[in-house]
Amino acid sequence: MDVNEILQLFKDRTPKVLGSETFSEYAILLPLIEVNGQTHVLFEVRSLNMRRQPGEICFPGGRIDRSDSDEKAAAIRETSEELGIHTDTISDVYPLDYIVSPFGTIIYPYVGKINVSIKQLKPNQAEVDEIFTTPLTYLQEREPDLYNIKFKMEPEESFPFKQIPGGENYNWQARNMKEHFYYYEDKVIWGLTARVLHHFVKLLS
Image (cartoon, rainbow, N blue to C red; front, side, top):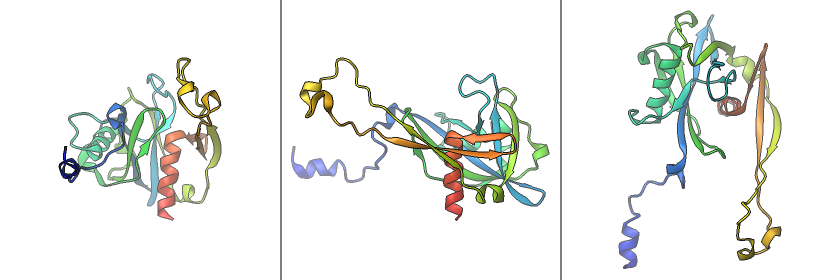
C-alpha cells in the first residue's frame, strides 16, 4: 500500500481514548442550585438498595444510553430522572474534564444549574435515599484531605516473563492515585465525587 494512500486514511480522523470501545461510559452533572440567595452544590446519597455503592454520596448521573444524543444529553436525562424534574429546568450545562478510570470506565462530568427550589425536587426513591446541599463558598474555603492509593501490578501465572527485558524482575511502573475527602456536617464526600468537586473548585480559582 502506497504511503500516501495510508496517510489519507488518517487525514480526517477524530482521536479517542485508545481501547475506549471496551470501557463503560457514564455522564454526571455537578448541580448548582440557589438556596436562600446563595449558590449551593447539590449532592445525592445513593439508595441502600442500589447494587453498586449503596449509601455513598454522589452527583446525579449514570450510564450513557444509545438513545442519548451525546454525553451532555445523558447527564441531563439522568439528573432529570433522579431528581424528578423536567429537563427544561436544567440549564447552562458545560463540560468539565473527563476521567478515564483504572477500573474500565470513562466518566464525562458536567456542571449546570438547577432552576427550581429544593422543595420542588422529587428524588427517585429507587435510586436516591436523600439529597442535601453545601454552600459553594464552604467548599472553596477548604482543601480536601488527601490519601494515597497504590495500584499493584500482578501479571497472571502464564505471563511470558522470559520474553521481556528483566524477566520476573521487570520494573513495572505502577501508578498512585490521590483519594480526596471533603467533610460537611455529618456527610463524607469522597472518591470520584470528591475528585470532580475538587477539579471544579480549582477551575473557579
